[in-house]
Picture (cartoon, rainbow, N blue to C red):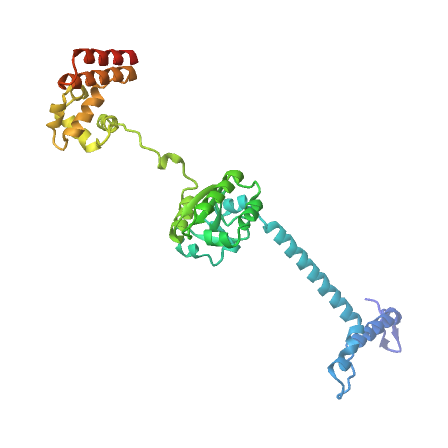
Amino acid sequence: MSSNRKGGSVTNPYSTKRKSAAPSQQPQQQQQQQQESATSRPIETNPNASFSQAFGSVEETSHFSTEMTAVLNQTNNNANIATTSRSSSSTTPHELTLLQPHVLHVSTKQKGNGLLRYIRNVPFAYTKIAPDYIVGPNRCALYLSFKYHNLHPNYIHRRVAELKSDFDLRILLCLVDVEDNASILLFLNKVCCINNLTMILAWSEQEAARYLETFKAFEGKDASTIQKKKEVTFSEQVADAIGCIRSVNKTDAATLTSQFGTVRKILNSTAEDIRLCPGIGEKKARRLHEAFNKPFSSAMAKKRKAEKLADEAAINEDYDKEDIDEIVTIGEIEA
């Protein structure tokens, strides 16, 4: 290791370089210290000055202007985000039913309506919608009280115009709370025919609420729930066929089947045989016998009627043979 010795002392060869580099760095450090001291310098205040006088000079500083600009930019960004979210949240009635298919959507205009306290079987929510109620994707309902209609007769026209053509099924649910309602029904029936509305009448708020619940509960079901069930077994088919006769029920059909065994024997039986069955009287037995033996042709029915008149005339002593022949001839001509 080489070193420069002068007068017995050891000198550092790099000391000159460090000393020469120090003056170039000193002005920069001084500038930074001056800036820091300028920013951290406390504001001189007068103890007797007011708040606005003491801190009025803060608005003139660069720090205040920078911070206020950042705050204003953040506020504008939040406002734009809120506007975008509000515009995206404005959904159509069809989208509402798709998002919440189990909910009965009620207009905010219906708050305070008495029928809402009777809706217990389906959930409902208040929404800003044109109709009063949305009971399905393309089904809506307007609610109208007859008393309110008497006070505001033009209300229904305005509400129907608001619906436009957004719904396939449009219901006018009316609460009949007026005794003299003939003229109101005639007017509303005409309005429904012109504007393609289905009018449903309810005589109480409970009944009106049941209609709305039923529409909402059965919106996703087909007509099979209310259609007549198809008979599968033989006994069911026999009961359905014989039950078409007036005053004959399924119990009578089962009695006839168990008594005679087959349908052929039932059809070939007489009125006296049918009357012997338990629960079947004379009138019901006569109707069954006529249904099994009476012809379906209208011409034959007229001929049978003429023959019946002829038989009654023969019994009566006031008619002679010529009158009887004339009655029979008239019946044949009509046939």
